[in-house]
Amino acid sequence: MKRIVIIEDEIIASGRLISLVGSIRPGFEIVSTLQSVAESIEWFLNNEQPDLVFMDIQLADGLSFSIFKEVDLRSPIIFTTAYDQYALNAFKVNSIDYLLKPIDPDQLNEAIVKYESWTDGAYQYSPELLKQLIEAVSGPKYKSRFLVKSGKALQFLTQDAICFFYSESGVLFAWSRDGKRHMMDGTLEQLQLGLDPAMFFRINRKAIVHIQAIETVHPHLNSRLKIRCTTPTDIPLVVARERSSDFKHWVDGQVNH
Image (tube, rainbow, N blue to C red; front, side, top):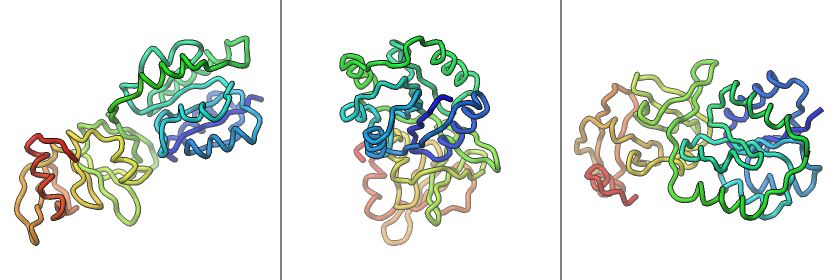
């Protein structure tokens, strides 16, 4: 039985991957699911290395490549990411593969078949290769699609399908252009790290709005601004007083937030 470790900080994505792996290879055993660089380092230092690792590139506490600085990791790795910009040839060389989220079952099966075709069960990740991977993902890389819940199913929304994100009672939601709200995993703070600042603005503690979702902006109480959305919504979109000046600059095309 193959021992599998999944490193993924999004609970929805992690659950989907576990389900897909279980259906494609019932004989694979998921021995651990890890959510951060720190947690992963601790696990690898205190456990036998697995037969295969699924590793998200961007974790809440940094790039997963940081794990290699502390651990002599020899397990084969299939990288996973929601960032289209990361889909580079660097992830296809030297027996390394990658999958774009939301993960397609056929592509997952192809990656597993590639792993199973290896004759050598161990692989050494050279400093040169890791440097190449880090350089490939350095610089501003922004999410272009977002995994959401739709009833009992999972789907993804593209950036252009989003009007705004908001937090309510500690739960993160996306409001789409068809006037529907979709539950998401994570927090507004975590989400903001992966958003293009030219397209999205944090208007207050509870909401982030997409530039193309703004129809009009009106003065509001206490020097605040109220946004009228292109898609009808009952969620109030009010720019906090301390954010109003930066918001005006952002709408005018000056990105400095």
